[in-house]
Every structure is written in structure tokens, then in C-alpha cells.
Image (cartoon, rainbow, N blue to C red; front, side, top):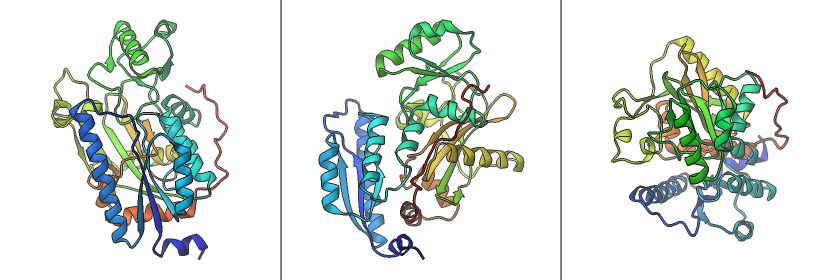
Length: 358
């Protein structure tokens, strides 16, 4: 048994890191609610890790990454449990945090810096998958200015979103467009509101699935979850928007449900797991994550997103899928720690591929 494997069997000092960006003032009830939800999740995770026999130090990370680094060096934890999900500084700061921990030589749960960045830069990750022959939605284009809309002929409807956001941020009732005029309006809104390019993709009308994955060298595939929009009014697009994810008083939230496990034919199940596994490996995820897949008009699965930093709340998402597989929440957290002590390998690289494949 390796030294790292032995360490994972005893009590560990776990540094549980989460985002607490200073200067962030919640300006809506939803934002205040999400901040409270985050604190509740971190407290529950800390309690769960302590019941496993670990010493837990909860570390909020605000703006000063180097002061945080010095504090982490003084603590000398056995493992850093990464729950840092920055909505203020964005993807680059998440990558920088993970890279700093890796350079300090500390085991880090979840994916390394490169994978975290790739999963947040949606256009780059989509083109990487496409170049490796993994199906993505057609018409995947990056629009850096409103005039880019006139560069090509479009197939409608399209879904338009910020290219570097996550958790449904920037997705709303007007995000599915059916005309060039509406496309221009959405691109202009994203450029002005989020100060980043827009990502446009053909809107896929089929079923939507979440494939939870836990593992390092060996992957554990969780039971398939399906997003149901059956009761959504026709004027609201059936998408996992910000409202559908977070605003409990919204119609989108009330009319969206997750079924896990869901019923699919064996051949479709095989396709979903195969594509999810290939996408997870292609982006160089490690530890745990979720791959979102939707069916096109002909029933073919296409990857919407690879989420390397999926939520670990105890009653939703990955934890819910794991529970359906007989993996309790404490066991899930312990698995994630064990995998962090196992790796990931340091020679992570992006494979050569043709990014212009249709």
C-alpha cells in the first residue's frame, strides 16, 4: 500500500476552502439566499468530515490569495478540500487558487487548475471536445462583438449565454432566440452586462441528462439523472436557467424537476455513459464532476457542459446520484479525499486534435 493510501485511512487535517470574496454585497433576496445556502453547505460538510474522524479547518478565501497561501503553509493540512467557486473574479482566479495549492505540494480535491479553467471557458472546452470527436451542439460560435452576428448564416433556434459563466448565470427567458434581431440583442446584453463574449449554440429540443462521475484512475459512474421540463409554459424555454436553478419563487424553479435514476433504453444509457466518460477525460477532470448532455432532434446525445466543480450539497446533484448508487454522503466525501491523495498525475496535458472538425 502506498504512503498516500495509508494516510487516507487515518485521521487527516482537512483544510476546507470556500469563496468569501470581500466587497460582495448581495443585492437581491436570491443572492442573499444563495450566500446563506453556501454557508449552510460548508458547515454541514465540516460536520460530516469530523464524523469521519478528520480535523477540519474551515478557510474562507477572499481577495488576497497570497495572504491565504501563507496561512495555508502555516496550517500544513494533509489535504485541501476545494469548495472555492468564484463568482466575483471568475474562472482565472479559480485556476490560480488551484495552481497555488498544487505548487505548494498539497493534495487538492477535485480537478487541477487546467481542467477547472477549461470547464469554465465553455467555447474552448466545446471545441476541444469537438476536435476529439465528442459530439457537441451544432453552430457553436463565439461572438465577441455584435457585428459578428452578420458573419455567417444561422440555423435557429439558438441558445445564447456568457462564454465564461456557470450555474445558470446569464441564462433567462430571452436566452433562446429565433431571429437575427433577437440574437443581436442577446449578444449586446451579454457584452454589456458580463463584459465577455457570447456563446451561441443550436438549441437542442430533446431530453436532458446529468451524468455524475466520481473517480481518478478508475471512474465510478453514478445513476443517470434527467431534467424534466414537462410542465413548463410554452412562453418559457425549457432550459436550466438561473431562475430554474436558484430562484425558488420563480415559475422556472417550480416547473423544473430532476428524476434520478431515470428510465432510458440500454443503448441510450450506453451512449450517455460513453460520451460522458470521454468528455470527463478529455477536459482532464479528476476526483468528481458532472457532464450535462442533451439529445438533438434525431435523438443523438451531445455534450452541453463538463462541470469539474459540481455542487456537493448533500441533497442535490452529485450527492443525490451517489445516494441512489448506495454511496452515503460521508462515504462520498471520503472517496473524494482518497482520490485527491491518489493524484492527479502531474503530466496532465491536452491531446492534439483538430479544432475545426464539423
